[in-house]
Image 1 (cartoon, rainbow, N blue to C red):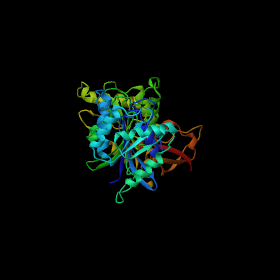
Image 2 (image 1 turned 90 degrees about the vertical axis):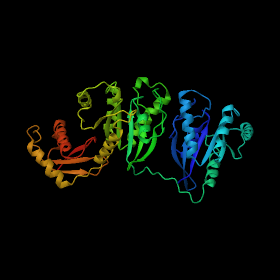
Image 3 (image 1 turned 135 degrees about the vertical axis):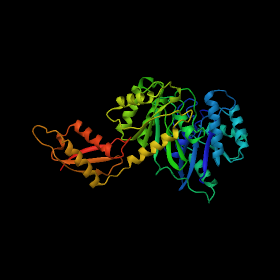
Length: 437
């Protein structure tokens, strides 16, 4: 097992800024008010040739009935259980608070090594003030300014010294795994689906839209299936994106689509497919990602034997012309059909990797072209002679012909539909190019 460090502290002491510093990338969203980080975030830090895991957590509040703060408390305790060493972060500008003392007690209970990091120490006066924090009873104290990065090198040196010789380096085990991103509007049930699949509260789930702000990466390895699940912030309509934080969350969600092999687009059965859902579908199609549509909260709908078929028909009318998309009706809350959904997603992932032999491609598609030739253009007859698959991340095909510029979109759609009929391409946007023979 590799070494794991958790960053813990009350709200707004600068945990996510330090997390980003240790990872040398802007992975966690940071802002000037508390409660920005709600779920626990993971990353890998590299220092002096050694790699270790870092967990960023939400701001810990001990005695609060606030729905988020209760959930964050649960998340922080999970992070403490997962870690080998804890970075306890405090703020020099406020001095020791009751919350700091309560959290110090909580950390001592864990019997794990703790380093105390006093943040916002950016002048001599604050450097003296930092000594007050020895009063919390931790031997290893570091003064830093996580905003400017001063002092972080000393923390990293200390962490590296604590890692036992026989501990494996943390590695990006996800590099070769299928990446599946869950996207949709806020409050459609993305985090509920993720928690239902992995059987633990990986994400904070409430009925308040906007609970997930960062993209959360989760390694799924159950029932002989292994992949990386990415839960994203809900993509809101532009008019509703008020805070900077929301804006960054939307950018993060689009980035998560770009990172994915297959996207799960979740829509709410109660509202049906809306304009915003179609925009998200458009982003997925534009980025040439595999896609599966999950209609969630199906348990809350009154239905008869025809409801599902009619619902599916409506969705396909709206997403046309790319209608070769699997659509499943689920309830993330009741765990209804969620494992079938994962099977379908992995099937789409396989479809995206398809490699068709050139002789098979030509035999089938030239016969289809023979049945219906491309229409002549300005008196010129168009002859397609040869087809080949191109090396690309998305199934891409080149049709070699005498007049590539004369082929119209309608005929291109005809070829795409015939290809989907003969080959396993469900859920995958494909590229068709016409090239001069």
